Image (cartoon, rainbow, N blue to C red; front, top):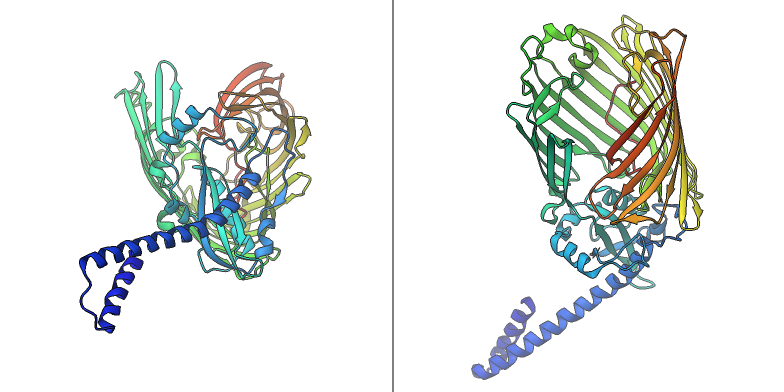
Length: 615
């Protein structure tokens, strides 16, 4: 319309300058038609200029994202594709989406057109405006290869996106400008979960993880349990990703079905409000978060007053941090992050604290912490670590953190100090190694109290290719020791230590855990769910204060299968059969387990909020 207006004004101006009589209606109509035609031609010419780099980038992006069952495993630094364009000016930013009619994990497989059309019609694709709010860069900025790599990883971590690629296209051979195309593939964001004690007390959840294509999750859960009064309970949840383009996630919700802090002894009604802005890149300055909740126990199961525990508490968790040294272009230099945190989880019924089943879990804890972190971090792109062929971002680097502050527990205020070292390493063959060392203790009257030392190690072998199959093995271990105990409890066998083995008798001050598990990634699928059988063993040794021997040991042998449809928002589903040989705490027995919504992303930021070292 602007060019049309300019065209007409030019006609009128020409007639004034040439002192010609007024333009006739016929001449004006003809001239307007000519202007419209020229405007259309200009728009088409402009669109064709834009379409050319998009088309080229789209073809390149499809080759980078799509795979076939015989593909070798890709292991490459996230920043490698962008290094040749460092310092060039970004001219245009385009967006291109891959629909459900294309399979990015088996480009040789044809998808039923009716199903893909139905999925595309039912699904609200992520809007361009939403994607722009998740970008770290904009037009007229210079290309920072590491910032683009972080942005690509950040987009891939959004749970409404399956995968993405950021493609840089030179404007011309000698030009100092480039165009950028962001290619994304959504997951089908809607779903229904049926959980609870079936069929007696079903719990149904309905949700859309990308409502209206705006990166927002809306969820509603309903429970019908005849043992409750009232029998119906509900929960609602809303989350918005990158509010106003700030890279801050907002969450608000209400639930009548929360398990309480007292080992789940009481049902709670709870309101919560959260804001979270992680340090998404080494080139961003600020990070922080707000987590506020109000919780109250409700006697929905009609317990007698002598048994029911009436309590109410609020929880407040606030933190913020500042990232120093964002200007160096290279990532192989150390940066510095300074953060402070305040949290308060209070139980108002203070006089009943020591009567509760485990006072250490229910007592009010207030802490003021600060943490200084020296860090360096990059990421590798790979596959078949926790996912079923999707692109995964594995961190590698080093961080050293020093924590200090004050903490109040059981009415006792003590100083706190801690040190954390994290080192992770990846190579192009596909081996992944990570080591975490943490120690922390309270200080009162210059004496250490309730000290903890943790050492954790994990190693993933390369994903070996066996024709259309791939196998990767995890070896992990951990060691925990407590020293100078005064107010803290004992270390115990957690569920993830021994695949579901839990006993109140297993308590001690030292624990050693070892796990070996191999997973076979197959080309098999059922209704789009890819299958991966696994086989593993676990062992835990604890210096047991309740055992007849000095230490107790328990084993587990497990096998099962995991399933996941990468095109859906559903988490990984796992069926596991576990055999527990005779141990110091029990006789031998079998156990079947069903787990869902398992963690499927290996991306992990090396800089986190200040925290106590836990055991």
